[in-house]
Length: 72
Image: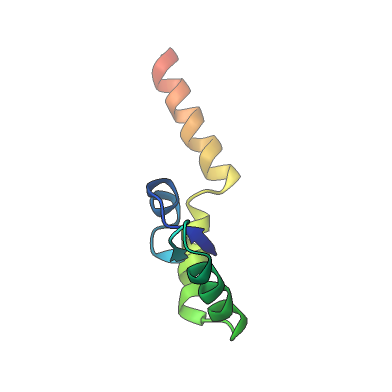
């Protein structure tokens, strides 16, 4: 993932993304070039673990638990 270096994307992506200054076109191009050079297995693994935190089933379970605690 290439993500804009702003608080919201840092919160979601943590160390699983390559960040760039959203006002710097050259920084974005540099990050794109980095990805085009080939996969980084460690970053891929980190990204997959991070993505698991946002699965539909996990999100549904969290919402269900919240609703149960609110209505019980």
